[in-house]
Image (cartoon, rainbow over all chains, first blue to last red; front, side, top):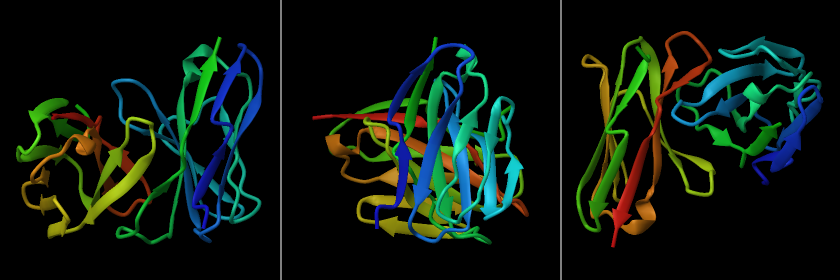
Length: 114
Length: 109
């Protein structure tokens, strides 16, 4: 299994540009989520999905959109990039219902918005 | 006040020392996770706890539900243990993790 994969690994955007961060998992996990990690702060939940066709907002959803058309893929879209969105983005997956389930994280995407 | 607080924020020790990292939380939880973030940025899950104690190699994690406190211990620390250790709680009844800020551990040879 490849686990959780993310592309790209690094991206530079100009303010106002849009882009999609890709996330895929091959473990048939229902639950997927996107986090951002900023210096001095813990990981913060952006959006999550408990299955194909179902998404919901996390703690910091503004400026981001998600969709979940398949179990495997959970892309994160930046509609109009802002410097405040400079961060490292992690995608994660796990099986649902799962207080007890292991979290699997992707390798991260480092985004710089100029 | 953050719902999940870790201490210390930074810890430097010599190889071989016994390490303790603490995590306190203020909300009802269904589980607590300890994660390790390597210098390269990758995050791996170390433990999930809902009660008691777990051990994996030189790592031991404990949780006291009544005290709302968990500790991660590393015995016979080694430079390869240098990483950021993150505590995260699964808020009771929700599907969401809330993370602490992390503890940066440096083990010097």
